[in-house]
Length: 460
Image (cartoon, rainbow, N blue to C red; front, side, top):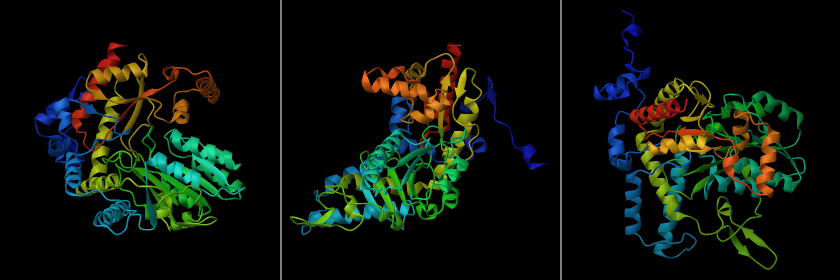
């Protein structure tokens, strides 16, 4: 017998996979082999509020939940140590603070395989983007690029500082599946002789598409400096920065099961020479005289002021937690959930998907609309069913306006109106986004599919 013929098909009810039956019969591993086999134990132990509140949380693209194991470990840490400042030197508390701070950085370097980078703590990915934009040494012949899929904070900051420096700024389009258009990028790079700073999102928060960073590096060569925004990808797939060979990178802890208010800025040796000391503060300088300043060495010179030491320690605990599970296993779990949800979502009449078809090279993010119900009303209806999603343009107005068929002139008009006379942002176009994390199980995805189908059906 052909082995393929012996594989049974999942049972169906009304055209959808009968997940409750599969769960009841203990056959989840048979039909969804990529899922974490111990996911139910993980949920009960480290995410008990899902069951207590009967909630399905599908807004992890905005912020993720933090495991109880991490919370309790940090709570115990706070109770067992006096606080100290790592800017002080000769006290027990200060020495412990510095040791903890350094240990957190070592964990981050190891987790992201960033041994060829300095690591500076920031307030998050937005803070990292701002730090790069304010510190970058723009020459008169510099070209600043951003992709169409960048987060608003990245596009606006890069465009503002390029304008202030009097250098050129351009946006590179993406293909329909959300990946950077390499043909356009190649043409732009070939036509420009000066240094180029490319702001590149690793994974889109709209399409979930993961850009092929190594292919992009091969295409543009060393003349193009690459800043990689890893906010969405970090908690879903293994990342090896040494192999990706970018010049700068940024990430946030709160999107990868850690605390809010802290992120990291990765700076390569080649990239460091392009960064200035214009923004500074305590810890970033060694000596200030009447006329001169002796700046600290990297990465200290990129960390002015008192840092979020407790956030750094807690983030380190979260990375320990993820490493114990394994990012390869998390990526496989996310992929299995994503394949199921995407395939089932496409079956629902009246739903228009803005995410690419298929799941190859993506993280589990899905953006859609109803033909008959406005996106914000759809999100509220899902919330009433106990399902949390995001609605709007997801801080990606340029990409979303394209997917929604709104011409640039329309968005320019809306921006001018909101910026001058004011207005209600509810007038803006938008969509619904469901974003998964490893703590979601197949029953979460199934419950969401049934709710989306029910809401869409009731408004046909």
